[in-house]
Image (cartoon, rainbow, N blue to C red; front, side):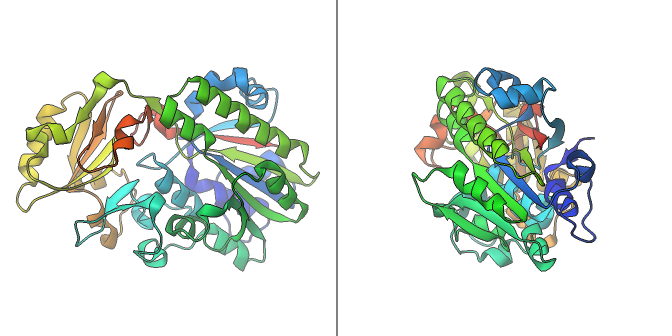
Length: 370
């Protein structure tokens, strides 16, 4: 079994000398003695996508060829989506424990759907996501941990849930990012960086599009800049939050255009590759049956209890259970389930998607460079 995104920051903390931090990934052996460590998460850089971008990314091409650094396969958590993965990275625990259980989730006791990337302070981040982060643990151990992020992210609910305890270094829109990130390595400790360019291009234009290839070149340039400016006692760790795949028009099903799929549903959450269906009272069995019949061979349709028992989310805290749908629909192959009456119209226009359990979505790289 590959390691997990949950193992990255504990292993980084161990490499930086934090007592009791578990080095599950053997990071100390891979990178040697360091006083400073840059961890960069490239949104959407799935392991299975690396071969497609080598023509635009000389550093990543050399890593893939075995000529630079070390490359290992890890797995992200489920659903394979950014909010869930970022909080799994930050806390080092599975989603059932931290509670950020999808791109969108129903707020229990209401009909409201919380979109985690647009979350401000309701629900309060510390209550919605109660687990301490590794940024807090580093701070408490006396190790500086800085997060260099676009200034629009600072103060958001998701940033607090994933990175609380970090010293935030906001980067203004239009300000060059790579020099800001590299400059933080002048001081010992952990420096965390994030780029969304590749994922944005995959969503808008598709994996393999010219837009996506241009984004890959920008990501590689960022990583090369960091590598060229690494102090002698520093290392660079590169990872991702998920991969992705393109979903053709004929593989898309709109639940809001299908009366059989719409019946008995109170709230729709999740995203196109993983749907959480919260049912009307007494309707769960009928919804389960209708969706199982309609999506045979195209999705795994389970009750909440079945999905939890299968270990999809890891152990789930009792207070987090109701955030998962009464019915959980996980697309297989390249199927996607749209919800045009429940979501912004741009969701249906996305070309590249993720969230499911396929290797293309779940497998992520761990790249270490000195």
